[in-house]
Length: 73
Image (cartoon, rainbow, N blue to C red; front, side, top):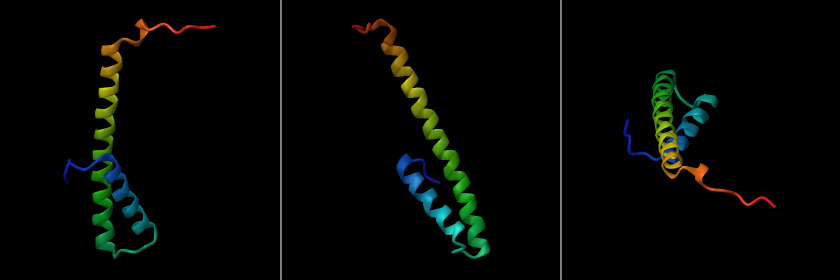
């Protein structure tokens, strides 16, 4: 499982796996393999989302948005 896939690519692959499983398009052995791949892709997507969350948190913290004042009229 490569970590070089974009989040969007992971989601597309997951959608395809779900579609194949829901429509009974795979023999049992292939369905189990697809399910396992889906679990791995889900974990990879969660890792990517956590990395993005951490990055956004750092950006917000480093730029200290509390220093900005909003003009309220």
